[in-house]
Amino acid sequence: MNDPLLKVRNLRVEFGRQSAVRDVNFDLFAAETVGLVGESGAGKSTLARALLRLTQPAHGSVELSGLDLLKSSRVAMREQRRNLQMVFQDPLASLNPRMMVGDAIAEPLLIFEPGLSAVARRGKVAAILQRVGLSADIAGRYPHEFSGGQCQRIGIARATVLRPKLLVCDEPVSSLDVSIQGQIINLLLDLQVDMGMAMLFISHNLAVVRHLSHRVMVMYLGKLVEIASCEVLFAAPVHPYTRALLSAVPRIPPVADVAAAAPAPLAEASLAAAALAHGCAFRDRCPYALPLCASSVPPLSEIAAGHWVACHRSHETLNPLSLGP
Image 1 (cartoon, rainbow, N blue to C red):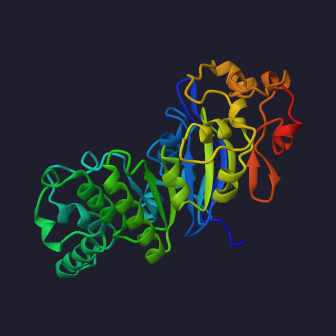
Image 2 (cartoon, one colour):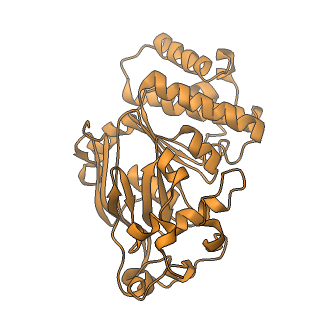
Image 3 (cartoon, rainbow, N blue to C red):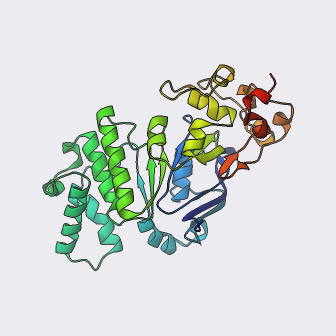
């Protein structure tokens, strides 16, 4: 397998004494889409911002093509910004209301390709607007003149005009009408194929994640609890939290003999920071918890090729019938 484009090791983000992201490890390869799912408050958006150094991590490393971004100087990090772009959840709020659409899209070109002539720059802006399904003549208009779906297309145009290596999408369709969501998802897939970029796609919508992801990561209270290929994770989830998450989605076929035993995924998680440090964060909601789960944090271990699970009973949960009450 090729070397990963992005390599994240032992990443931790803290706000005071609270750890929002705890010892996260994963790889992301060129032209790959990795979905990141979990409940609200799990730390998904914080992780995304930490990867781009929009939030400063407390510990760990984030390597892009071998360069550790967390140890890079401001100048070096600024140079890497063209390779790291983000599409935000609220399309209108992510655009400067006082800046015309064409100027907003041209700004990255002004910063990273200052040698471009004004004519060439306008040409690139027109081309990317047309590529995202908008007319080039909207460049002189302001964001408030457009719908949410159109603003998100503008945001995507701004993020991809430099052809980045990695595009981080933080709930990019959650605020849009269902009829528009599919169009935006298909646009992102088309752009990924055209540009060969990798995507980290954060979403609550498991159907969307299943549609576009090669692999899926499941996060719970700041930790990754399961990583697997999309097909394996949706067909045979292993971690009890992943099973609970999938069983809550009516359109996804339930896993045989598991749904009835799955804990309620909507129950509020309420463990203190000290408890998180000494045991499995999911133990109070898990029907399979053992005394060991309260005293030892389960490591993220590879139970099969490409399938990683953080559970003391992961080898047992591969076969639900082997689990006791």
